[in-house]
Length: 583
Image (cartoon, rainbow, N blue to C red; front, side):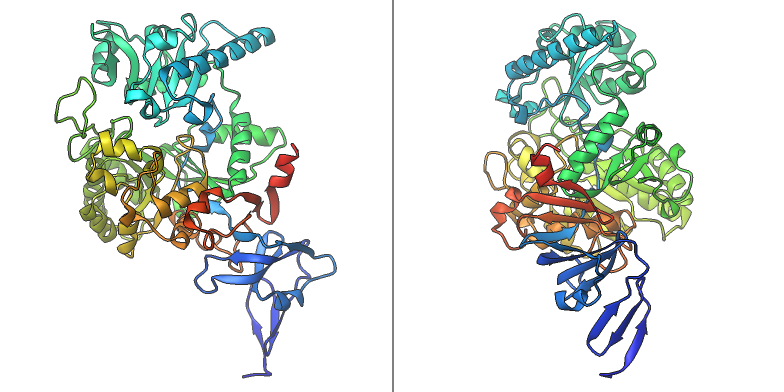
């Protein structure tokens, strides 16, 4: 057929004559040609190319540099990657972006590695906040001081703080420091008083099993699950409506988006976000906008159309429904099929965590979501919670007869069994692993949560991929850990704990497989693989540019790769050079 010309129906009109192709760019206001580096498309049809041509935020063509150069206009911006690596923009399959950067960070990164350092750091942060708010006239009696991210598994003996410890931060102002799991918190004595947690009180009796206690029986400030979550919905407390040390929601969102962009993320999630719609509205009122796309999951009441019909409005999309079936393994509130290797103090020897929903309540919600076309994310850390979801989803599918729904997602899935992976493949259920557990809490899994044998197979990525039909993604559950996609890729490939110990190396995956989990697989999870997740003609121009190629460097070096630029719909939203210059 050489020498004949054909008209090929692409979004950009092109004429191909023999081996020469020229793209008509006359309809675009702005065009850009990227070349001069490794371009990893994550597209099986053409995994690597020399150049990418973009018009008005859409990928027009990919291919050889000489071929695409023939189509450039006089005003086409030429971007030489100078040996750097371009990938599709990273896709966050689960996090809570509206909570990132909200409160002071009490993580090991801040030097908080013991109860004493927590108190020292907390006192410093509290004094600065109190002095500033009094000076500015914003402090009101009853205001709370809140921090987030303490990790008792990094403390000597894994012993966490008590109310008495936090009283040293302040005895007059209610203090709450949220555990890194976001399922547990510790409060001071003033906060215990305000929440009604004192011996013999109705609240103390109602939540007795979710409260930590001193040896004499008094609540010691440790609040688990619902005993903690009351802070957000009980009208007698209601932190969301109280003045705290947190900045306003729109400022939190602005900062968080910059953090995500700096990590190469172009599509994010607000999992169980209750206030983000209002935050976005305020941003728009102030003439600002979202710099990345955000998928929001919440209650069914917040949905107005089936998930497949939901579109981004100003960058925000009401994507589906989030269900909570259990708690956190590191807080030992996740619901397991077997007892914890070391049960928490005060619990019986057969303690295995607990559910958040009854079978019937879960079944009813799944039936509603199936019938209304709402995508479902199910928080399931423990194997018993995973089993509950699989059982009730199979039941709901049988009753409704609906087979064409968007595939629900097991979120976290730390302890999923081989048999459960088989059922997930059979029922059409996908899995998003919080795989960073292997690093941050791997040692604790081996010594306390699951033990030296079961602990080896947390987040079994390789097993899930081997099923062939399960769409596998990985996430950071930020603000639990930073939204660092490259560190998650490193963990998926290397599986090394914080102490340097190998943990279940047979469940590791190859770098390209891990990169797919944070790009095209993430797009599939949202049902958006048609417009993002790979560098493919017709998709939006979402890219991340790295200083090295994750597929070519030594596996141990992946965590050290830097994000140079992040590009959203053809526009640079993060530049390392500008960040270093303080702009």
